[in-house]
Image (cartoon, rainbow, N blue to C red):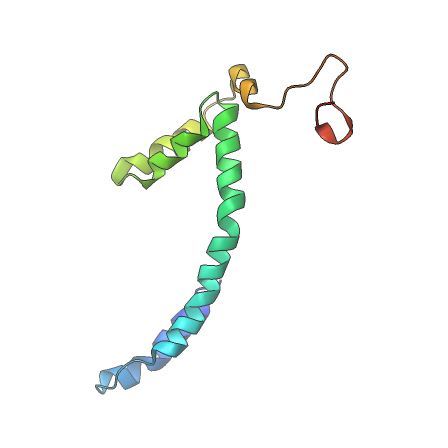
Length: 108
């Protein structure tokens, strides 16, 4: 949805660019900035959910960095997240004492 203003700004400049005029980069930059801001806002929550799911499967969240590898490297962490949960993943959870968790889910 946020890329629609960018597409409209680009298509609106197409006739002028066909006549040899340079594109107005200000319009394109302004339209593209909304998409960039949204990507940055969503990055940390997505990263947190991805790491948590890797922890639930008993793996370190650092496997996420394999997503930067080209080609098949991005599929490996995704497949790891699809696998069933593993009880050994609880080693990444907060430690609670015998009385149970305190209010709010934190240890006492």
